[in-house]
Length: 128
Image (cartoon, rainbow, N blue to C red; front, top):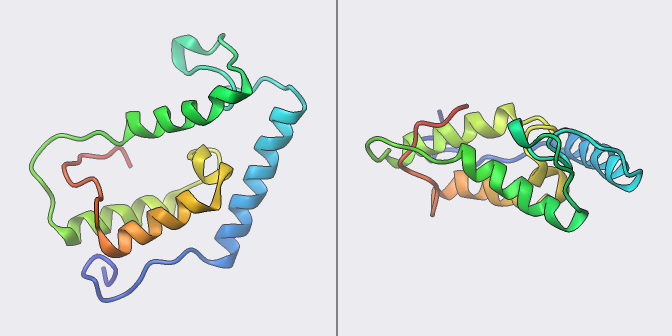
């Protein structure tokens, strides 16, 4: 609640960064070995039999994130937005958000956005 109310800053622990790095290494091993892994280098759902080339994997990650980040309903205030972002960061697993596995920067940007709620999605009913 302190982060949601602007009374504390959100930061990922060293252990969280280590888990992100470990997950990233696993994903990179799958890609480098040419293995096929659902949602890493294949389409999702009915498109699971389509294998994507490596140059399209970043776009797959982005599209997956965006498809889960849309929302409806009234705008949320800053505290509500920060609280939702904190909950999302707290539950992240490396296999859930591949962009976190690809780069440290997106994770830093998400925690920075939660701290400032600048440009954060505000019209939301997220599937958290």
